[in-house]
Image: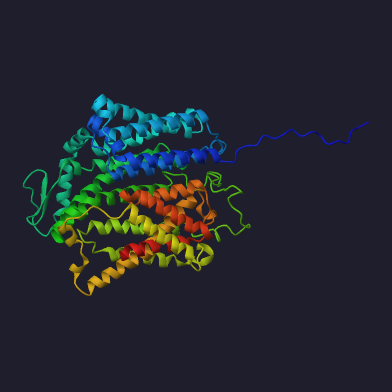
Amino acid sequence: MTSDSPPSVMPSVSAAPPWRDFKLQTALIVIEGCLLAGFFGRTVKSLPARLIGYEGFNRWTILFILVTFGLYLRSHVTQHEPEYRTKRLSPPLLLLNGIVFVSLMAWLAAMAAGIAEPALGARPTLLVAAGLVASWLATSLAMWVARFDRVPRIVGTIAFLVGGVMLSSQAGFVTQGFWRVSSGPTMKLVEFFLAPLAGGAVIRPEPEVIGTEVFSVRVHSACSGYQGIGLITVLLAAYLWWFRKIHRFPQSFLLFPVAIVLIWLANTLRITALILVGIHISPEIAVDGFHSNAGWITFLVVGLGVIWAAQRLPFFTIGPAGTDGSPTSAQGAMADDVLDLPAGTVGILSGPSAAACLLPFLVLTGVTILTAAFTSGFDLLYPVRVIAVAATLWSLRDQFRPAASGGGIVSPGAIGIGACVFAMWMALAPGAEAATDEKLLAMDPTNLGEPWTTLWLIVRVLGSTITVPIAEELAFRGFLSRRCIDEDVERVPVGTFTWLSFLASSLAFGFLHGGAWIAGTVAGMAFALALYQRRRLADAIAAHATTNALLSAT
């Protein structure tokens, strides 16, 4: 006789939600890093200099390393997504990381209080601090990486990136050696470019001095272009590694000599332009503005230009499709629990496109660098930024219709959040260091005379309360926040919350504000909360605009 009873069912073992433990560990490392940087950042940064006499990184090289390595980690996690989705927390590693971090903070506090050094001596104290920093980094990496056999690859990437920047920015023997070889051709090329444009005879009273009777410069070894060569090499190496699936090898390695020659030629044009600015515009602008910004302009133009050209030349890349005509990857697919939209509506209701979110901020950044290169002291060309960004936003206005951008009536809560951020900002970042009377006089808009002073102030207020908040919120809350959720930004609805996107976009916004990064990070979190209230980008923009308007009024 057969039994009609249902078959027995084995009890299922409950699994952790995807990404939960990975997000917890990432958040913990980020929090520890913020605490370490906030309380003892200068001490940790000075350790290499105090141990080996190394001058250290400036804030731009640090930002370059952080951004580049952050992009690499994002690519690494994407390539090994199944492992990271199911990664489980390791209590022993978590405990070890906590012990090392607490020990490091305690030791740095002892150094700051002047207790450790008298007891052990200067060098042993620094060695213990460096060892604790290295131990914290090692335990953080071991806790975060899904598989231990991939730790050496990530460590190698860190060493390559940091070593490349160190070599390109500080190695004196490389500088002098390169300059001995390149100084002659560089000066001859500058003289060749300068002669028809200088408006007078080109003189070279000394081997490394060139110009005219009106204005001349001394070209030191630091101006030889080795920094640009080092940075362009690191940028291309990272680019080819991350996008190796679409590149043809070995021909793509030819990008290195091409880029190096181009950046060297761009450096000679930079020196030529510096002299021409001093001759025809102003020596002060040439020294204070153009000299400090032109290097980044040439690096960005050459670096992005080489990458842009490589992606469009079949000699270097295989194009967007494989040999069979199918896409090279299946990127862009999102988990069902992230998207909950009817079929056919993704990309219409999700928000502005990636280009619409990024282009205003890129224009703002690019025009800021360009205008800074042609000003000294007073920011006379600020209206150019406002006009450029406003024109960009107007050209993209179809992307910002209410259905796409979450527009409509602004929430009163967003205005309140903006006011609270203003109060917080005044408490955490009340102002910069006191400037000299001469510097304050040079930055005073009343020097323009009426009605230009009033017009400049009006444009300044419009920029800080309208164009800047829109451009920055589109970039950080409209693009970066969604990009941290899925590579296909346009599939992610505006206001979709994940811890990774919330923390990453807020920290990136904080780093944008330099020395006020703590206040900037908190402000970024507050603007994100304004967005999450109703999933409307207009609310985040309104909160940001309110903060800036109140700051402009003080």
